[in-house]
Length: 208
Length: 123
Picture 1 (spheres, one colour):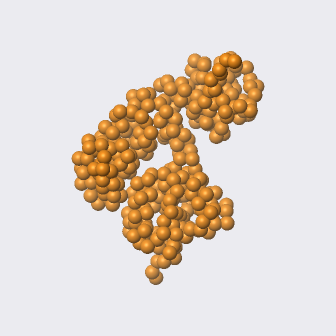
Picture 2: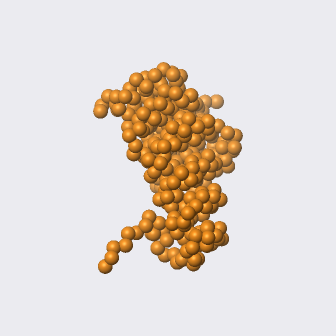
Picture 3: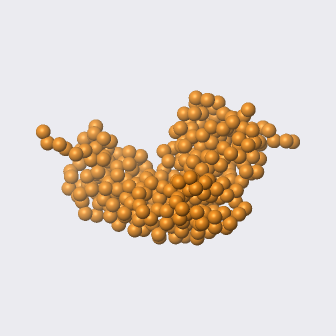
């Protein structure tokens, strides 16, 4: 018997039945169908079509069904092209906390693609986006993670961006983070949380 | 001893708030997201919740909305967030928060709010 590899979306769609044609134009239309089932199938099957990322990103901003969103994120993660990554970044600017969190989780699965734009995200004019970028670093398996975090705590003027970075340095920081952490403590000398988190990180680094 | 549940996905933030609250004489439990907090809130009684807004799985708004639909709805809650906009504050109160604080919290501000909501504030 031939082994058939299950796609990442297959569990969610296991009970569903395709009800639309699978050519690309039909699938694009399927993303706009009122039935979430049709949208789920379209979101999955569009992966093989040109311009799939653009259609999925456009739908993502308007999609309110959690199960459809899950599949759109999954397909965008599989595609991982520039448009897909830009669409995920766009979600970081959303007021919808669930959408932002889903985008962060999706970005964590694209270490190389996200690494290429990380510097820009960490220099974004919106402090919230910089915080979410640090959140992405939490599980981003990439050799530059500590360097990026050190740069954040040395340069970022926003206390909550630095606080988020210090939390993570407490887990991934090495000897290289020691002096930057001390500088941070001096820079935010009147912020009890920074003092607490930096001391904790320094203690953990000393125990390595 | 009054019991407080801290709900935050950041371990360092939980440790920080635990340190402040335990030093002030409160018993503290922790949850890492809204789902875990809801489970603990339904299994055990607390005098106050200290809740972060941005969390994976179930965020602070979702937790409070679920909580306010249960019998434990009268337990007060402080929401803590990095969001300084008035709209975020309004949204927190609409979800059922009794107080709203900005991160990073300061020990004295946290304790003032805790004492007020637990009913220990001096006249």
